[in-house]
Length: 425
View (cartoon, rainbow, N blue to C red):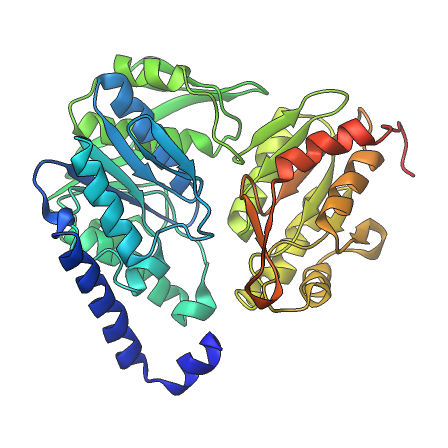
């Protein structure tokens, strides 16, 4: 129905509808986004947003600030946190305005928000004074919704045009676009040694990874973070760079990051023995490849991979690309359901399967069965990687129905129920 309405109603009218709804929400809650008692920071990019929100929050809390945050994983005001059950990374206008209002009432010093291109397109960022914006990276995503990669990039850019301070990943090829959004202040972060800019740059170096942590140096101090994935070095460096902008020293950052307990569903190691099982949210070609590459550096093992494709009815362009990437890195590829919405799951599966060689391919529509199958197939020479949903608590199927879900619990239950074999069955 929504698709039909969008085709009938002019885009200008839809834009005005979204803007007016945001305005009404801001009025209803007294324009909390303009309150000077609190600093609001937006984190955006294609990948790494939730992780960066989490890491920034932990550093601020270690420093003694009271923090509120909202990401695709959870919302948090001070010590009170809730799992994000919206199936929406950036909440709708009324929810977001209410969240800001509550954060102010609870005397929070900072709000760290995960900001999406869809949210910006629908004016959810309006009537909020952003004291800072963090850019993680940019690769093709939501192309069908925005019409082109350039439109997607421009949507992201709107956040940086209104922010007072921009923290930019200089190692991303789109960095200059975000630098040129005319902010009052820019700080860059990079893993390159010789990055000369006319604004402050924070450099990281001497990166190391193992199956327990990532390590790197900033200003001569070794930072240790107990999370997996080489790509998380950049997310950690983004958080540290923001901390520096708030006059938080490197030792505070080091202490905060060393004590974190991991990020749910982000390179989360669910089992170590008899073989590693990793669950990750990766649902874009770039993020999927980075997960596989990072796993290669952690384990000298053959990969058995479970994947689907993000959301039925959307981003169909990337389905066979996901399949090709899995084909390039994995010994066995099990393609399964993810969030089909009103599209036939088998059609999505078949689209992804176009990129996978037949001898590597298994199609199992039921995601629980697909995960269980991967675990039955694995032995000590394998690592099982399950991507697409991470810690998402719901699966969206036809007719607006949502099913309670958790890939991580399914993995644990599969180990309890299934007899682990040391050969393919």
